[in-house]
Length: 467
Image (cartoon, rainbow, N blue to C red; front, side, top):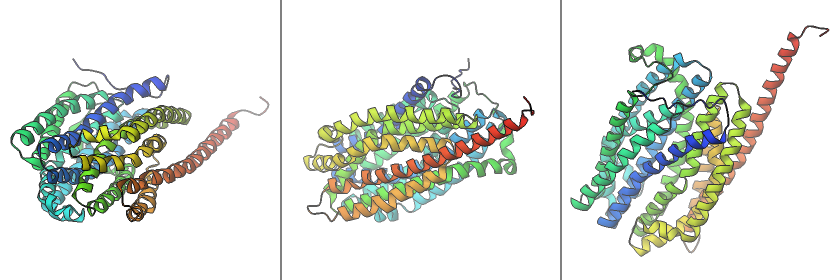
């Protein structure tokens, strides 16, 4: 029997459906973050500091590439949501076909980059000499399976665009279990270090893709999927352009944002092996800290896309307010815990006191960002949903390269040198980005009011004189 899990966000209450959609997204993001976290946890307990540094640097690079792909695939989420909101479901199948063609090409390109040039990438990251073999091995191994990683993100984007957040949760849960057992087997038992952790990660995501395929066949979709239509590449070209127009600014933005964090990591790597391992641990904790805001961002984007496509901007604005309120409550609590007891969180991923001390030092600065991103991420979800992805790109670039990177370099010279000082650059950049979002929101409201006035004028002209 086929299951129906697609949600129509254009009618009824907002808070309940938004939360019900967000919770599976949050759990899926949590489990997805466990990939890298479990890698680091097991390596930290059963391998050397060089392996920890190799996994932290290599996983940061792979996370940057994965985030780029996930952001690019957001173009498909937005387009599918808008088509469903517009009741033009006949165009959903070619949208999916265009996405498959586009992301296959991206996967081939990234595979060649990471498999052929892992040493150059690790050198650009200032990977410590002792950790260079582990870093290269991790990058190359993950690069072999990067098409699998792309396929996973693409499938998740398709279902979120349909209003289904539970199917991706189920598949990633299965993959997480596989990853945990793989890490324990390859790292703890066979002592394969960073390479073993990478093999386990790729194998887990392959399982996720296979499970997704069989679950898709059991789904009742709001449209008919016609693979034979995908053979006509010329017919798919308009949809490729539309997905690219929506997704490329987001991907480019995430690439630059990720690059900014890689630059910060390179700055920290120059401080030595312990600092490098400490930041790697802190970044894993930070990934979990940001999960709630990220989940609301993705959920608001899907919610807003459908309503914007249906011509209901007021529901879009209400969803924004609800998302910010709920995200802010969670972000405040998480930030306070991270600041005052971050050592407990960092201690999960390392047993070396010096590494834990450096990690907590960085985490104290990042804790302020847990509060600020409650605003920023939900704003970004809103702007993605209405198709303002170029603005999202602009604010990301400004935050990364006009604030975060310059301040990180300046703060790295602040005596005594500490990861806390370097970490302060991130919340500083978030403040600037929030200000830009408020400016863009004022422009959106003016545009909405102008459209409403024009519609009112049109309706007034339809009324006969004397009525």
